[in-house]
Length: 250
Image (cartoon, rainbow, N blue to C red; front, side):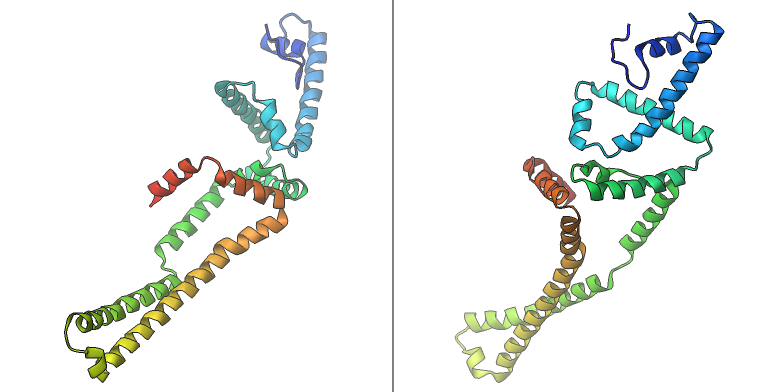
């Protein structure tokens, strides 16, 4: 016996579908099938309203379902939607494209829809294209990273004679820096190279951080402050787990 409340289907309709309408004559069967079709169409249209339903309410709606029940329900819901799409000849890429636009619209309207940011609404072709770009970027050396590496190598090259000169001056009785103009010039020159090179590395990394981390974060905060604050608070939850993840990624 199904004790669940009526939803997309009434309890009676649910039972009759499972029994293949065995207890009905042809006229009543056609009547029930028509009513089910109407409820199905109305349910599909209601998803436009539910798409903007708050995350918290979705969580409360399924909190009494077990993990297996939820997975099975989501799998069946996916089958239903995909069957409708396939039967009507609707292109999957078109659906995903509209879903992305709809997600952007909803995200601008409400701050309690952070789950929209985690949705993967990409076609297989888009995933392949992004993967190729990612792999290419991974193996292609960034010019500014190369310049920063070059400056670090220059720093190391200048540090060696600087360290040796200072070591000799401090461990011998001779006042090397006081008596040798060449040693003094070498120390000042190497120190200048180290300072300039490290300053260059700092400026490059600061600019990269500003471009790739700070400005996107500011843009996200200006567009949706509530969501940005929520994401920041999420980072503070269970810090030991996040620290372990960072450690594993080193």
